[in-house]
Length: 253
Image 1: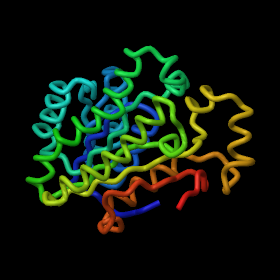
Image 2: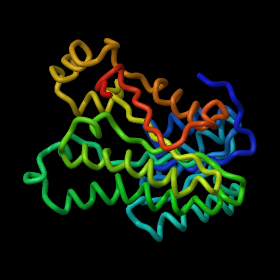
Image 3: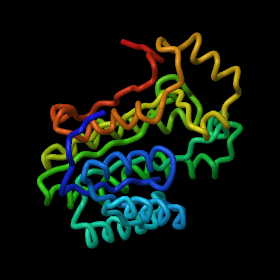
Image 4: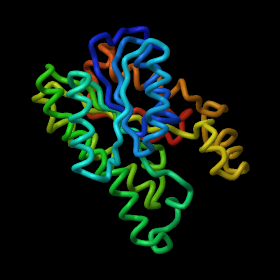
């Protein structure tokens, strides 16, 4: 795991109250970064921010539904006002339950719209809301969370994560003049409580034993390490890329 410091930097992390978002927040805070926990779950966001504060870190919680454009602007505004700006944005909030892996003809249209509002439009809204602050501070880094489902799945969820890969390229091009790098991480099968509770055990076993080249479950630190690299000076020549962290699945030319 990278030991580079992020003193003086501010990270705005969507879906930051739990799971990967909380892990990202803890890793960046431990390296001197101030943290804005942006989450639709206000009590959970407050709890995570208070825990970080109790450990000596600078952190705030901001209520943020990434599907609400005006709400995103307000949340970023609060972070800028209270923490001084935004240098790192992690677009982590997303809908990802098994129900979104149903065929388009099965999933109700309102669910499809809600999925794309969060997983796709939310990335656009948060990125644009943070752009000016990043530009004024000399640049920044945006990390989008995609998925290996965006490479091989034709479900609504998979297509939404394919769109995240496309947005990563488009936003990298659009924001390069402001010194903003935009990259994505595509996690594979991760050994998180939510993922394991949501997937059949035979599917998990098949992935680990037959589809991956590295025969173990992915760990939280695997994704955190990728995030730290992409945010750090070690990743300063990387933009517009999606880094697969998936044990070698799926490989493609």
